[in-house]
Structure formats: structure tokens, C-alpha cells
Length: 490
Image (cartoon, rainbow, N blue to C red):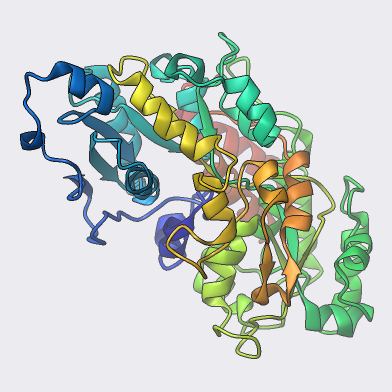
């Protein structure tokens, strides 16, 4: 949910992220405000300084304006500066594109972004968003839910959508999430791929299992089994050595939530998928057996486990590539091999396929600049050449050589890119995450996930702590949903 600069900022404030999905990016997830000049404000609206001034051309020269966009403005709405900065890079690499970019950046903190975006879309007019971003926690509201009527099909932006999806080999779950079910048209795509893996400590693997080889560790924890049996066998082995297998129950939750067969709402009614209901038992099993440090994700204790400073050393975390880049790395206690836990990590396939986080880019169907908007969106979400955003993102060249590498939506781009990281002991993470993206399921989300997940996880924690029995926890969860959401509860 998950994340780039956004997740790095999020990781610094646990209070903001207690109800995360997940951005990549980056990262899980709510976000902090960031504008292009790095000021933190509740809402930032600014035009790019390097855009061509309307004074440079006569306003009467309509042919020039239509062909280049000189003197015209594209309104971009986002919850961090990540997508606006991508658009600035597009302008930098496409000097013929003369549109000015007006940014409105409103953090998701305290739920501020969605109401403001909804109002702007409904109001329309020249200040309405032409391009807007939505993250995994609430994207279905804009692609398939209450606000889906404002989303423009990519086909109407001059994009040969299906052909480009096929060429770029876009991860299917991102396509499913971005498809309007009524029209069958793609109205949103992401630039990250957030399929999840198991990210583990090599030194602990060697001590407990005699190997740190990703293929062997994947087998030990039950890769591809679809269940947690071998994972718990590994947890018991680790316990015998004084280790925890995960930091807290939240490390398993994201894998369980996003591998479930159905979502929280089916035909307008609250639905508790059996896999999600089983999280009650998984959480209690972890706690009762001392398999973790009983931390809560995005807390100081969770971060401490990443640098090996918790109550007991923790074997691993479940997550996408953004969790490595923007959460584990900044909290590992070092910046080079041998410092803290830097370089002591590896990734392997998890017991069950899942994804966590991500950002989708949409266009307003009422925009009068659809062709120009389409050029930007195509470059961000579908271009699979070395000149596209995703190649820069995958190879860490967005801000010049030596930047952060991340997994992207295009498998074509990942196949032509190098995902080798010193942080992972020289492992190429694309070898694992590329496959992980193909197993992710994008058909179990709802527009209410951010809120319902908060209710559910709170009740699970109370149950595993012995504060409530199982039936009471479920009943209280249902009551919270009934009291606060327009969802039928039976």
C-alpha cells in the first residue's frame, strides 16, 4: 500500500500508519505531506517553476497551444509528491511538452485526501483534477466504487491499452484492480509491482537451518504450499535457537489479507473470508507459542527488530520490494555491509502469494486535455523502453545513477533490469519478486478496506491478548462495521 519517498516518510511516524493497508512503493499505508520543495503542508498547490510561461506565446495562437500545450495547465492531485515528481521528470525528458503542471498534494493523514479529491471531481470546471492518484487502501473507490464514474478509460486517452499491457507484461493483479467492471475498461494502472516475498536474515538462517540459500529457505517455510504448516515448523526450530520467526502478527496479516479468496464486502454485505477469520487463530498461535516479539507494525519496537535490537532476534518480514527499500533499509542500523543488519538479508518465495500496497494513476473523464494526459499516464504506467519511468524506477536512475531500485509493474522492464542489492548480500531481488507479482490476487479488495482492516486487526489483537473470547471479538467487529459503514451486516 505502498511507496518510494512516501514510505520512507511514513516509516518515521507510526501514528500515521497504524491503519495502513499499504504506496511503494512504497510503503503500507498512509502518507505525509510532501511538496516539490520538500515543505510539509496540509495541502500544497504549486505550478512547476520550469514550465513554459504563457507569456512566451500569444494566447491567440490556438494552433500552437493545441499542438504543444503552451500556456495551458494540467491539474494533478496526489497524496504525496511522488507522482507529481514523475510528471516533472516527464516534462524534463520531453521538452516539446509545454503544459504547465499544477499540483495539489494532500496527505492521507486523518482521511483528508479522499474527501477533497471527491469534492474536486464532483465540482468539475477548470480547477478539477485532470490526473489523480489513488493507493491500494482506497483505489477501488475510484476504479470500481462510488467515484468510479469520474475515471476515464485509458483507451479514451489515445492509449492502445491492451496491446501495451501485453507488451509490457503488466502484473495481472494491477490490471484487475484498475478495471471498471461495468465497462470492462482499464481506468487505472500502477507503476510499482508490490507482490510479496519473505525477507529474512541470512545469519539467522545459517544458525537455525544450516543454509541461507533462498531456494532452500523457501522450501523450509513452505513456499507454494498455500498453508502455514511448514512455516510453523520453522518457527518452532527458530524458537529452539532463541529466535522469533516474525516481529508481530501484522507481518503475517498482509500475506493473509491479500491472499484471501474474497473481500470484506460481497454484494453489499459484510463478508469474513475464512482465511481472514483464521487470522484470529494465527495471531493467537504466534503469541501463545512465543514465535514473535508481539510488536505492532510501524511501531518503534517493529523498527527495532529490523536492526536486531528487539527482545529476541527476528528471522524475517513479509513484504514487497518497497518494504526493503523504504522501511527495512532505513531501519537496519547501517548504510553499508557490516553495519547493523545491512547486507544480512535475502528474499525467498512465501508460503502463499500476496501483494501489499501500490499507487494507481487515473484520469478525469471530463478533462479537456485527454491526449496530453494520456502521454503522461502512458509514460508512467505502460512505457517499457529504457526511456520510460519504469525502467528508471527499476534501475535506480530516476534521480541519476546509484539510486534506489524497485520492482515495477512491467515484467518486460524487470527482465531487462538489474535488481542486485548489496542490502540483500548481492541477491537479484527481481528473480523472486518477478514471480511473486504473478501470484498476487487483485480481486479481493473493496473500497472499505482501510477502515474495515483497522476494526478487524484491533479485535484480533484483543482476542490474542486474552481480553476477549473469539465470538465476542467477531461480534464486536461486526457491530463496528454496522455502526460506521454503509454495509449490510448479518
